[in-house]
Image (tube, rainbow, N blue to C red; front, side, top):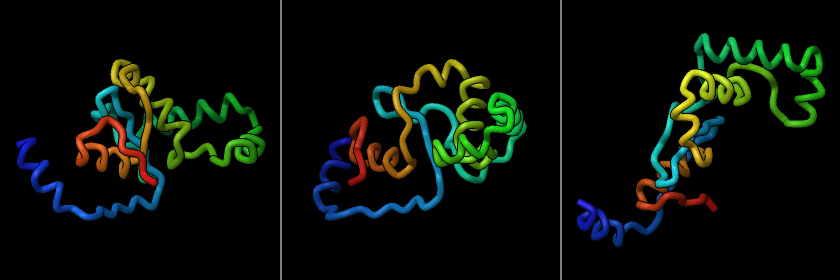
Length: 119
């Protein structure tokens, strides 16, 4: 299979990929996906619980946090999603060596490399 892919790959001139909204996936040392694909469209109880935990930690300083980090404390953004992933799936979370966009993760798999940065 790998040889066939390599023969076909020589004919590919370019690849386009669009991932407009926020998305993130953890990958291991070999570039394999680990855990959930985190996106703007999340809707689960664990993330809602972690968003409330973040708000309790900030205790009314959400606006300052937003100004400092550029993100709000809401289910659609990463702070609650990352906390939920870490708490609900700790073994998988521990295998993540980096987080990347879905576009980078897919292109890395297509190019058979652990990491294929988008430039």
